[in-house]
Image 1 (cartoon, helix red, strand yellow):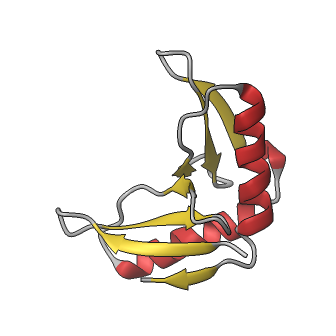
Image 2 (cartoon, one colour):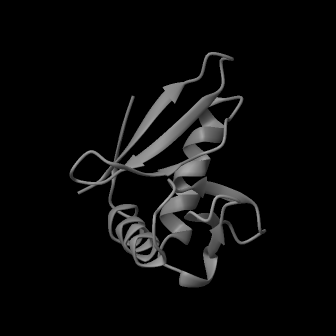
Length: 107
C-alpha cells in the first residue's frame, strides 16, 4: 500500500508526496500555507484518483510525458514525475489510482 508523506518546504509551506509500495514518488502536491489545507489536498487526491477523467495527460517542452490530477473544480491537486513514454505515464496513473484511496499519512 502506498503512503502520503507530508513535508515542510523551506518557505514554510506544507506539501505531500504520494509514494508507491517501492518508495517511488508518483504524485507531488502544490504548496499549502496550512497543515489543514494540506490534509484537505490529500483527501481530494483520495476522492478524485479513481476517476480517469480527472487526469490531465500532458507533454513537456522537452517531449517528456506527465500528468496532473485535478479536483472537480479543475484545480490541480497533484503532478507526476516526468516519464519517457506515454505507456510509462499510464502506469503512473494506474499506480496513483491503486495507491491513493487507502494510503497512510506520514510526516
